[in-house]
Image (cartoon, rainbow, N blue to C red; front, side, top):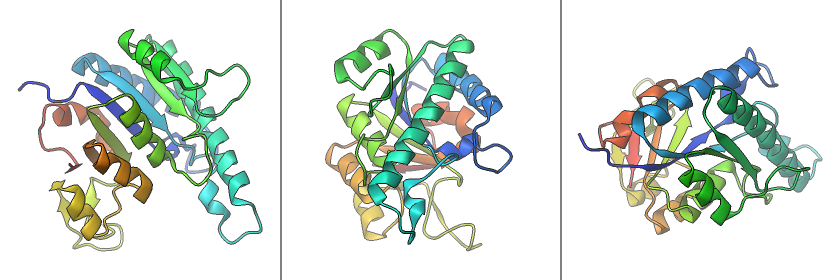
Length: 236
């Protein structure tokens, strides 16, 4: 079957880097993900960008009702994504896969995101890692994934989650939860399904960027989605 998608943006939450279910980072987790990414890229001959989360270290939204400024919390979350980005970049390069991290926030000598330079890196065959979210508070890494996919004209956004796709209700709490194989943007909105946060989802809809939501445990099977086979939930 002919490959349907060539230019992919992969959104991965920081939870994949949790160390023994506690906060922090795991170098072995960076290496394990890097090995899978090398295999995916090699087998499918794709241009691959990755937007990384920081939930294993800190989430801005977790300040909750605490007397803590939201902007400060979100800035802390952006720094957390940068830590993960650096770890994954190093692991990929050590695995023989040229990778480059670009950040939306200024930290030392880390390269800031630039569309033209990012396109150049992709053309060279590098895996691009985008950290720092959008660089602004009040926006999630989902929004960053949607934004970068639109800026680089990606064919597909793939969002890795802890479940097999989009359900009509929480599958962890409801044994009868129904998994959707395919949805339109309008159906997802009407049914109030949590595909991405609202800002990210609207951006994808307006720019006609299809989204596949899938279980991170099945990441090595991404090739199925790229060929148009059933995999996770397709929102288009």
